[in-house]
Each structure stands twice: as C-alpha cells, then as structure tokens.
Length: 435
Image 1 (cartoon, rainbow, N blue to C red):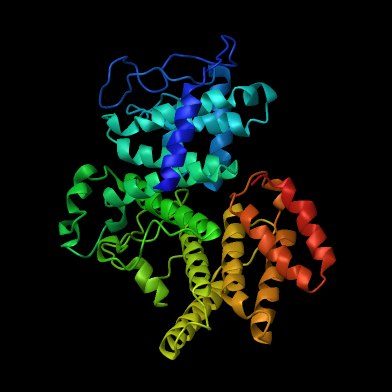
Image 2: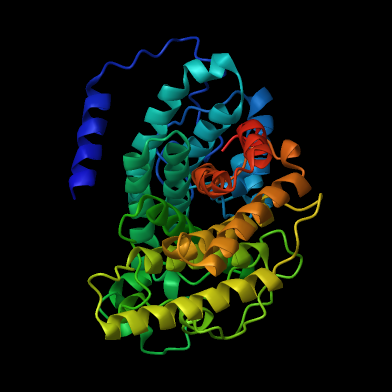
C-alpha cells in the first residue's frame, strides 16, 4: 500500500506539470484510423484519438518492436497483432495497447529526435492504459493485461522499480480476477470459489490462437512476478499454496509454433505437480522460461528462510528436506533443457541463466563452509559465463532486463576464486546487450 501511494503521488506530480507538446512532434498523427473507423465507441473501436507514428514509419516501428517484444513480455499472436495495428483486422485493438507499443517503438528506435519526446508518449500511454478496462472491445481485458505487462517491463528496464512493480501488481490482479490461472481446469467446482464470479468477465475464446494467447498471458505475468519480486526480495503477488490461487492452466506453447492444438483436454495443479517433480513433457521455450522462473523463485525463497541459530530441529529437518527436493529438481531440469549453441535464442539464454542462478541462490548460505555447495555455485557461475561465450550475444541487441540483475551474482562468486579474466569478460560484453 505504501508503494502504491508513493507511485500515485509521483504520477499526480507528473500530471500536474505542464506538458510541453510541440506542434512539430516527430511523426505525430492524431487520427485514430489504426484503431477503428468510427469516432464513437463501439465493440471494436475506441473513442479517443491516439498519437501514432506517421504512416511511413508505422509499419517499421511496430515491426522493430515485435522483433524484440518477447524480451519485454509480449505474448499476443504476432501476425494477428500486426494486422490489427496496421488496420487490416476488423476488430482493431483495445484502447491503450497500441499507445504502449508506440512508446516502446520510440524507446527502442535509437533516434534522438524520438527520444526527446519519449516522456510525451509515456504520458499518453499511461493515460490510455488507465482507462483501458472501460472499453467495450471484445478483448479488452487481455489487451489491458498486455499493456500492463509492457509498462511494467518499460519501468523496470528504466530502473523505475516502484512504478514497474505497480503495473506488475495490476497485471497479476487482472489475470487472477479473470480466471486465467484456471484455463481448462479439471476441477469443475473451480469457478465456485470466492474468485468465481470474476471468471465470467471473459467470454469463451473464439479459436485456439485466442486461447493460447490467454494461456501465455497468465504465464508471462507469473514469470515476470517470480523474477522481479524474487530479485528485490519483496513478497510475491501470487501464492501457489492458497486453494483459490491454485494454478491449473496448462503450460504455455510458443506462439510461433505450427501446432497450437497440443493443449491437454484438462489440467490441474500445473505448478504443484512440477514442484513435486512429476514429468509433463512440455518443452516449449515459453514453458521452460516459466519453469526456470519458478525454480529461481523457490530456491531463493527457501535459502532466505535458512536461520540455523533460531530454527528448531523440526524446522531444520523440514528445511533440509525442501532443500534436497528443490536441488534435485533444479539439477534434473538442467539436464532436460537444450544446450546453448551459437544459434540459440535469447529466451534459452535467459532460461539457462535463471536455473543456474537458482543453484547459486540455493547454495549461497553454505558456500563458505561446505565444499560441495561452493563447487556448485562456482560451477553454475562458470556455466553462465560459458553460455555467454557460446551464444551469439552480439546479435541479440536487446535481452530480458532481468539479466542485468543476475550479472552481479555471477561476478561476485567468480571473484572469490580470482577468475579475473572471466569477470572482465562479463564487464566487457554484457553492457553491449541492452537489458
């Protein structure tokens, strides 16, 4: 609550400042043809005109963003989104989403002219996103979730963590209240709990692509939550142990996959089964990313609770039991994921980094006193460095901002063994990737 008050006070102060919009704003177009043909609100349009890039640069800017969008939480079907953004799709886009995409397009453009006006695009995106749920677009909720995820990534990337966590919290609230954690649930009574009535805010998906978008929306938000609340040690916005928050939604598929029909008929306890080391055979990059983020969170949380001086024997025994379970799960996961190759994607590099940092976090309390833990930590740190050498990092341009948080962990442990050459590699190469 304190964080939210601080964020709101900052936003009020920002909005009270006079906005200095020049009439020569680069490529500014106040028409709303990209969102619909009517000036009134209908089921597929918005009422307010939206600033956009000029026609000559619109396609290029959106294309550039979509090329890197997966690193910043974009989970919608790319081709469908592109057609809607270009005005080639009858339904268009819900209010606010395209404004956030244009903000990202300006942010990633590398143009000094655009950069000078980035605050104006940000203000517009925030205003439109705040009113997103008042629209009547058939995909209002899903597009609002996408906008909140992109805004959260934007602020986190720019080290505005309070605002980033505010939009993360908004995204979590939307996915849970919309029932996206219970998609294809085998529990026929799932919607009868305290959260049940809100589940009806979403109509049935029109096709498999739309359902996969909803599934990916949930897992994208969960992964973002797990990474960033763990990174700063704040409480998670989602609990796996609460009955009403049990996750039944099946693991996500890659939206670029040719076969989106591989969804199970029903699903229940997806995360619970994973943590119990029950094989599921799902190996999509999106699923591996979600699983790695869960392991990162679970290992970090468990290690933070280790206080041998105040824990009784029962608590210590429970800790060691949990430690062994998560350690076994992490090591087994490492063996299952594809090795990093020169052609490996950015997503796979993030997956490998997450799971190795999970090992570092888990064994950190014992790294000084126990040789086995120290070797595990150093082995994982070396593996992260080796993966950076193996992968074509210079071709990535942008990568998930969470990578910037994990780098100090690796260099810290490597410095313990005076591995200056590898530490120099990290300092010299990672800044070339924009995180």
